Image (cartoon, rainbow, N blue to C red; front, top):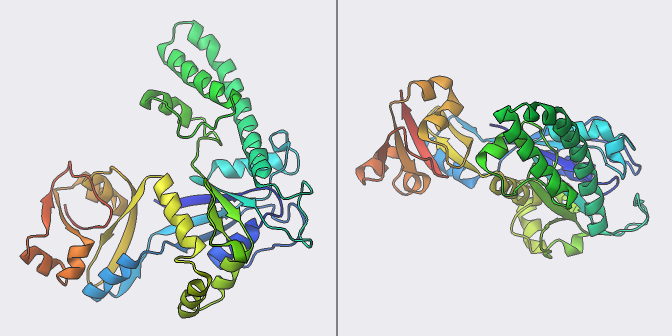
Length: 348
């Protein structure tokens, strides 16, 4: 599965600059609203030091990481749900991503105008959230109207659906996002089919000046898009030295991807051998056959068993043979729940 993250925010908060830094793609980043109209898309490898270590043990010819797709979505403004700016088009782009990176500006720069005239992160955050909620309310009101009549005829499915829609609407009416709320599995089934904008995990990212990049703010991931832009043009060695000089442990890219994985309950397992070592992304709680299905449908349909070794044991004992000799490799069946960092050999 390819994780897709949409970068959203008001105009001139640094979305295109951050996107360019994250993906090392050259995109327009001029100082005017709606510079980005069609979404720019860039695919980047997920940084994972385990992958290279495992590949070294197997002396693999190829090393294939899992990837994240970043989508740079144009700036939204108040009234976007009614089509203000280029709102409706941009809202449709948000529906297509798995998670939202909501970039909020927290830096002063006389050369970069702010669409509302002043820098106020909480106000900016509320503007975007309000537009997403208003768009979803329109969706829900239309669906409720279409469903009420069918529910009155005694259709049990429509009654259940209507109850779920009304619950979601009540949350939005009270100013709450839909994602992460207390819905039953059955309610979630009906809610998901609406593809609501507020039913996606949101990562709030604070774009700050370079000298403030090490600060922390509750509820936000603090990143300096300018620093990330500079890092994108450096070699790995130069980037490590620069981060160390700034007092940072990791790049903003690494921290953003990790936060996205946690928000979406994603984990990574590995397959390894002389030809290739590869990382695969699955949802936490996936069974061994489901994980195999990520490689090929035959691996799920014709699953017999899986040989599973933790990546640390592969490293410590020099590969699968050494790990097996130490009793670190397990034979697992169809009910096995894959864990983050498992190295798996599937038998079909």
